[in-house]
Length: 115
Image 1 (cartoon, rainbow, N blue to C red):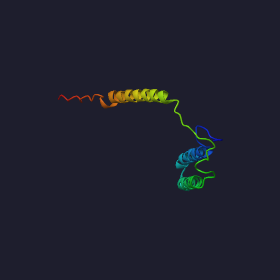
Image 2: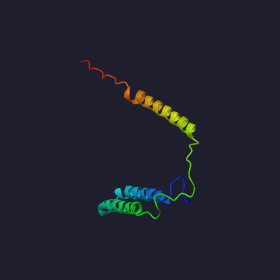
Image 3: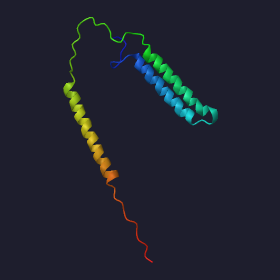
Image 4: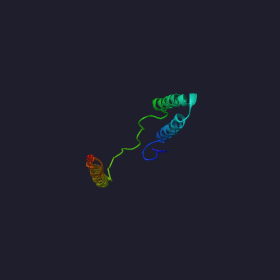
């Protein structure tokens, strides 16, 4: 699989770059005034058209022809579960902190007027 980075080809990076640029341009154009503000719609539709063309008309075949039998072995099995446990502990700790700071925040009574 020549030309791949992290298991994906150049097309994924082209689509990601396209949408990052479109979102940046939409954010900039949304601050404009007048007719330029409505050009966000055309920028978004143009990006949708370009994306659909790139996705629906690929240049290469979807499944490459294998030269030899490929045996898939998960060498990072234990590390993946250690990472999952670590991230789960961080998530639960963060959820606990949110519970303490936002949900259980005390509500003080307003003082009564004495007249």
